[in-house]
Amino acid sequence: MTDSSPFSLEKDALPKHIAIIMDGNGRWAKARGKARISGHRAGALAVRRTVSTAAQLGIQALTLFAFSSENWRRPQDEVDLLMKLFLHALQREVKKLHKHQIKLQIIGDLSNFSPALQKQIAKAQALTANNQGLVLNIAANYGGKWDIVQAAQQLATAVERGELDASQVDESTFAKALCLSDLPDVDLMIRTSGEQRISNFLLWQMAYAELYFTSAFWPDFDEHRFAEAIAWYVNRERRFGCTGEQISQLLTTASE
Ligand code: IPE
Ligand code: IPE
Ligand code: MG
Image 1 (cartoon, rainbow, N blue to C red):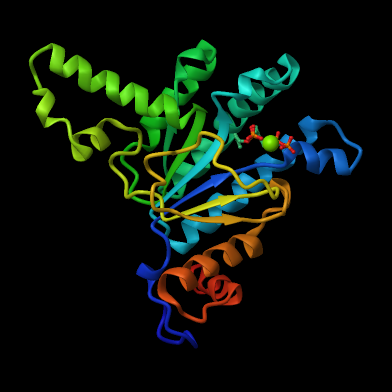
Image 2 (image 1 turned 90 degrees about the horizontal axis):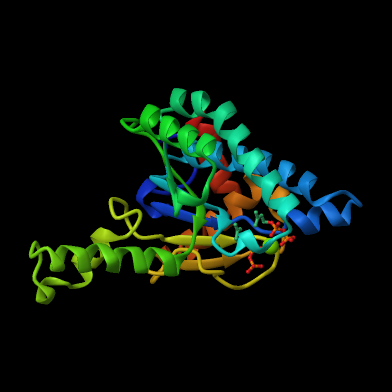
């Protein structure tokens, strides 16, 4: 933000942590008479746009739901194509993310992924681990229930080993065992495509998130729609008369 800005929107009015359920790729493709995979490809472009906007706005953390623990139930062809797309995106985009100081983290049960994908994930995370810009979390084979269970297992193991007393298990020790424990909880959760549910995304971390639903399909989610969602959040939290245009203007000043 610069002083020449015609409005006074402090950076700390913006959400620190935004989580997005990127939904509607299949319906976007269907509406165009195309195969579902073309929707996923268009969705990958929307991911790139969204990451770039979040980074320009100086958002601390962006967590994107890319593949849920339930998505394995989709037809094998689609699962295979999604995995391929994920691998290619990692190979192609990581250098660019690194150049922009973005720290990439993949959250979820990675054990089900192919060795090639696991290797690429480890490489990407190691390369960007010390970056100081946007923290970009991609939730892949992630489920909110899985996260809570794996945290409970960690704590139970620590108790079993005598490293922790059962009476010491409280909200704070539990939260530390969950994914994303090093980040603030989610302030704003966005879901595209008109569905209004959480679909086993971050459960604990979204306990107090503002929930924003838009009917736009994920491939149509652009800078303007993102700005609208953020303005909605700012208005709810701060009761400002903030508009999407004002958020977009922050983008212009950020890139100057
Ligand atoms: C979201 O789009 C992407 C993933 C879940 C991988 P969908 O594939 O769920 O698209 P719809 O909901 O069928 O339109
Ligand atoms: C949620 O979308 C998961 C992702 C965006 C990766 P889905 O389209 O899989 O969710 P449901 O099954 O319709 O709730
Ligand atoms: Mg869907």
